[in-house]
Amino acid sequence: MPGWSIRGAVAPAILFLSLLLTVGSAGAALFDDDEARKRIDLLRQRVDQMEASVNQRLNALEGTVKSQGLVDLLHDIEQIKADIATLRGQQEVLTYELEQAQKRQRDLYLDLDGRLRKLEAAPGGGGAAAPPASENVPPAPPGGAPPGLGGTPPTTAPPGRSPLAAAADLVTEQRSYDAALEQFKSGSYAAAIGGFQSFVRTYPKSPLAPSAVYWTGNAQYAQRDFRGAITTQRQLLSTYPDSQKVPDALLNIASCYGELGDNAGARRTLEDLVSRYPNSEAAAKARQRLVGR
Image 1 (spheres, helix red, strand yellow):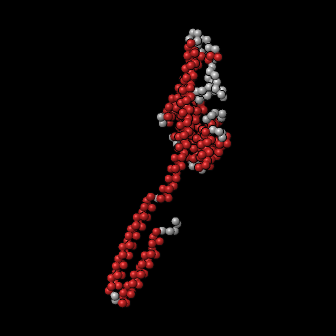
Image 2: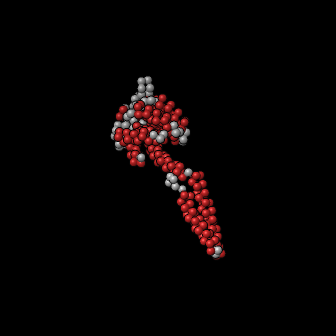
Image 3: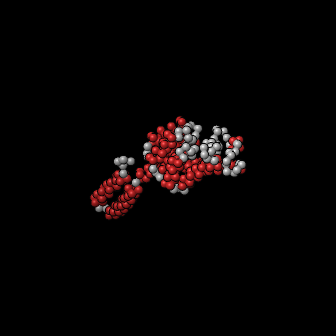
C-alpha cells in the first residue's frame, strides 16, 4: 500500500520497549536494586536481539520485493494468460483449416483420378473425343459445388486443348497449392508465403486462390508480422468477398490487432464478424473472445 512500510509498523513497538528500558533503568538507579539491574540488562539484550532480527528480516524482505518486482511479475502473468488464450484460439483455427485442406486434397485426387480413367477409356485413349457429359460430370452435392476445389472443374477443354490436358492442368494447380501448404505445416513460413503468393499470381481465378491468400496472412502472423498479415487478409476481403474464408480472415485480423495492443480494433473486428457471419465457426470463437474482453 502507498505510504505504508513494514518498518513503519515495527518502529512504534521498538520505541515502546525502549521507553520501558529507560523507565526501568531510572528505577534501578533510584533504588540501587542489583536484581532489577540484572533483569533490565537481560531485557535490554533481548530487545537488542529482537531488533537485530527484525531488521535483518526486513532487509531480506525489501530485497526480495525489489529484486522480483512483484507488481511487474503479476502484470506479466496476466499478459501470459492472455497470450495463451490467443494462441489457443489460433491453434483451433489452424487445426480446423488443416483438416479441411486435407479433406479437399483427398476428394480432389479421387475425383481427378476418376476423370482421367474415363478419359483414358474413351475411344482413342488420348481424348480426341470427349466422353458424354453424363459420364464425365459427377452428381453435384447440395449447394452445387463438387468436393475438392469448391467449384465446378471444367468438363470440356478450352479451345485447342484436350480434356486430358485440362485435367493435367488441374493436377498441377493442386500440387502447387499443396506444396505451399506443406511448407506452412512444416513451419517454413517464409517459403510458404512465397509459394502461396506465386500460386495466386499464377492462378488468380482458381477456387483455391482465396485459401492461398488466407494462409499467406496466417504465415505472416506466425512470423509476428501482424501489420503485414492485416494487409493480406484485407486483400482477401476485397478481392474475394464471397469466399468462405472471409470469416476466418476477420478472426485473424482481430488476433493481429490484439497482438498490436489495439484492443478497440480487435473488438470492432470481432463484432463485425459476429454481425456479418453469425453462423460461422469463426463467429463462435469471436463470441468467446468478446466475453473474455
